[in-house]
Image (cartoon, rainbow, N blue to C red):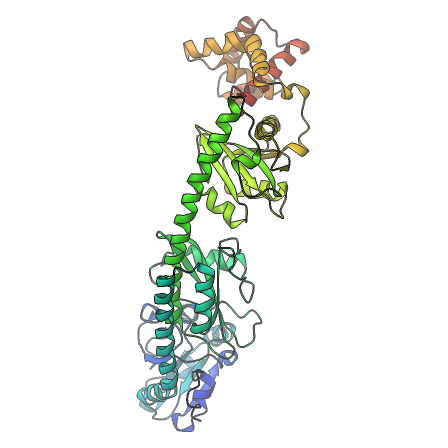
Length: 528
C-alpha cells in the first residue's frame, strides 16, 4: 500500500485504514475519507485548534472528547473549521475505561454533516505506529514541498532583480507552487490589469468571510467548502497593504493534490508586499491626477476653455462622466474611494474643496448607472450629482454644470444619487446660483439674519412646519416644543418674511425659497 516514489499525493484517511496491521476503521464521516493527511498528531485538549495548521490526523484516547452531546458537536465543528483531515480515537475497552456509547448520536450526525472522518483505532495499535506510517507515506511529499519552497523564493529573488510587474509574478508563482493563483479585490475583480480571473469563481460572501478575520498575522489558509471542483481544493487568503486588507489571494490546487498550505502562506506574504507597492503607485497617481483636475477646474472658473481631455489626457476615444459630491460633515468612504473605484474598473481623477468633491471618471465599457451604483455603495453619507456621458472633447465647465444641476435635483427629491439624463425637476432649479440666491434673499433674508443674530431656529421651524403640511400638532411634536410656542414662532416668521402662512400663494414663495436654500447649501453658493 506504499505510495509511488516521487508522487506529490499524501496519504488519505481511507488509505490509512487499508493498512491491516493498524487495525483502523472509519465509524463516521465516511464522505471525508479522501481527505489527505499532512501529519499525525496526538492531543488531549478540549480545544487543540491553536496547535494545528490543517491537514492533521488528530489522535486522542478519548479524554479530549466531551461527554455532553452539544459539546461533542462543538468539538467536531472546531476541528472541521481548522481543516483537520480526521479524528482518530483509540478504543480503550481493553483497558476497561471507555465505552463507545459515550459517543452520542449527535456526535455521529455532526461528523457525517461535516464530512469529518472519525477513525476508530482498535486492538493494541499504538499511536506512534500510525504517526510512523503517515510520516513514511509523506516522505516523498516532504522532499517535493521543500523543492517548491526553494523555487518560490528563487522566483521572488528573480523578480526583485528584474522589477517585473505583479501579473507576471503571479503567473510565475502559479507555475512553481502547485496552485493556480489569482488576486482579487473585495468585489471579486482582479486587483490589477493583466491578472487572470480565478480558475473557479469565488463568491463575494467567501471573500468577505476571509477579510473579516482578525488573525491577519497568521492567515492560515483554509479550503472553501466543496463547490463541485472535483479533486481540486480552493483556498482564499487575505492580502494586506500597509496592514490593511485590500483583497484576497485565490489559490486552486492542482488535480489530485491538496497543495502545500505553508507555501501558500508564504506566497500570500509575498503578494501582500507586491500589492503594497501597487497601492503606493496608485496613491501617487491619485495625487497627480487630482492636481491635474484641480488646475483644469481652476482655469475653467477663470473663463479659460478646458476640455475633459485636458484633465484626463491619453484617452481620446473614451466616454467620461463628471460627478459632484456633497461630502458633508461625514467623509465616510471618501478617503478610500479611489481604491474602490479601481476595484470597479473606473479610472478616475478626484479632488476636494472643503466639503465638496469633484470626480472625473472614465466609463470604459460601463455606463452612468454602474458608476452611480458604485458611488452610492461606497459613499454612504454623501449626495452625488452625475453629468451625462460625455466625450473627451466636451468642455469641462459644461460637464460640471450638468453634475451640479443633478446634485440640486437630488437634494430636491431627497435622493442619494441623481444623473443628468434622468433628472426632471421644476424649471427654477435651472437658475444659476446667483438667481437662486436672489430668491432666498428676497424671501428669507430677514429670517436668516435674525437667526444668525439671535441664535433662534426660525428657519428650521418654517421648514418643518411646511414639511408637516402646516399641521400644528405634528410640527410641534417633531420640533419637541409646545403648540403655543410654535404659534408664537410662526407669527414671528410671518412678521420677518412679510408673508402669511394661511395664504397659498405666499406659502408657495416660502416653500420655493426653502428648497432653493437647500440646493445652494448642497451645491455651493456660486457657480464660478
